[in-house]
Image (cartoon, rainbow, N blue to C red; front, side):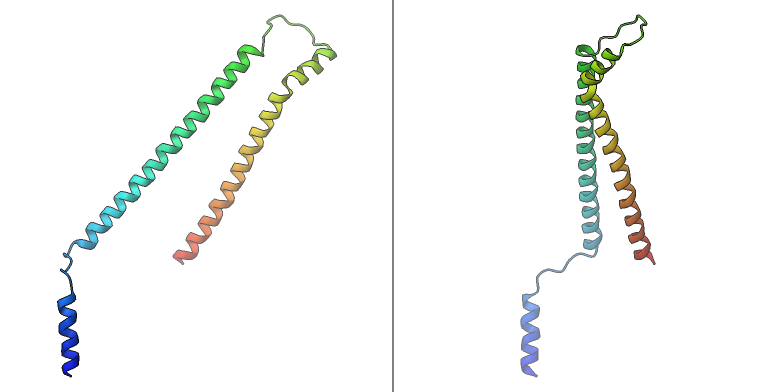
Length: 127
């Protein structure tokens, strides 16, 4: 019995200062603020990256239009030889356009699959 009292007395002396009543609410506010800052930083970073990629694509398109695409305003029927020349000349551009469309389609598909999976998890969690 005396041992129990001695242990309780020793534990009371080891205890540090008690936390204030609003500690948990203050801590949760800080956590929410940090999460909001992280989300905002991520959003700004993705906007900067998207802007940089868009500017690079626009400048590359302007470069290609200026140097490789000479537009003739006179109307003439294209010959078969010039058709093959233009396909050979602009084949790489068509290839890049095809890859871009393919990547956009794949992005759309994978985002829809991910969103369905996320919604199913949310429904299971709330059920």
